[in-house]
Image (cartoon, rainbow, N blue to C red):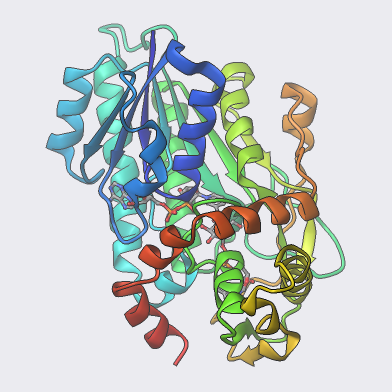
Length: 358
Ligand code: NAD
Ligand code: DAU
């Protein structure tokens, strides 16, 4: 039975990936989820699978070398899928250091521990072992409004402390592949949306605020463009890269779905109106009047757009979920998980929100 060590599996994409993998492989695989449970980690995301015999949760910090070494020593790990990171750009602008610690140092620890566990005396690596580093399109910087795409060959030009820390982590992985022929892949993906996304991020924040009749903060002129991908499509791509990708290669993953932020808000408002029952009191609250233009994000990247040509040509992956369907499913999920949202937005979130949007 193949054993996966997933880092950051209690976060948004990591938990969706774990669900996807159990749906696909059932009892054929074993997953060990290592997560420090920061504000973004939530074990509620994994409630349905926590009792499985082939699933183990370990609370550990990826910068804790002793803890990670012990996990490799006690388990025969075949695959590492490395999601754990500080992931929110706005937080990185306020407090960059923790991004360097987790994203750069944490990745270095994961690489070192995997290398130590998998390396043979002749410097080669045990057959079948692989490390997949989950990264972002933000490492490529910002595109002009009127054209161009990010390719795997696009030079790195990160702007925020978050994207700079992710770019550094990618460089570390590349250095291990180049120096040691360490068996790895890197994936650089565009913006994800879907179930279990923490409401500091744009789409769940807009859904949550709209349902409460709270203002919908739009940074700058609202015309920044992101390329949105449904999270399950990302999970599938990660699995396909592990199964069919060529070692040492980078694959860009994207939704072919560019939208301005203001368009996203309008689609969410329309979809909420469609999906709320006529007698639901929240229906009256959901309105364009809530849209509020606020001060722009510092260093706000104008446009991201991935060209997923390589992953399509080599591996046969393509985005499957149309944005309208994905957003309907996402909104439906939030309707059915009001407790999840209530828990996620209690306590520290209130403090964060007041500080961030004051
Ligand atoms: P998230 O913030 O929702 O989850 C991050 C998880 O990592 C949390 O469970 C958190 O507890 C854990 N974590 C943080 N610091 C840790 C540490 N020091 N040790 C162990 N665990 C720690 O993030 P996400 O949106 O799910 O993103 C996951 C990965 O995907 C990140 O590497 C991110 O850069 C990348 N990515 C995200 C997107 C996106 O749109 N969200 C797009 C492309 C790539
Ligand atoms: O592109 C991939 C990246 O996408 C990931 O690497 C990051 O982890 C993920 O957080 C995301 O980064 P963004 O900064 O693009 O996502 P965010 O949801 O924070 O913002 C999306 C857009 O919406 C961006 O242009 C900023 C804008 N925005 C965001 C918030 C939170 C607003 O206008 N108002 C808001 O309140």
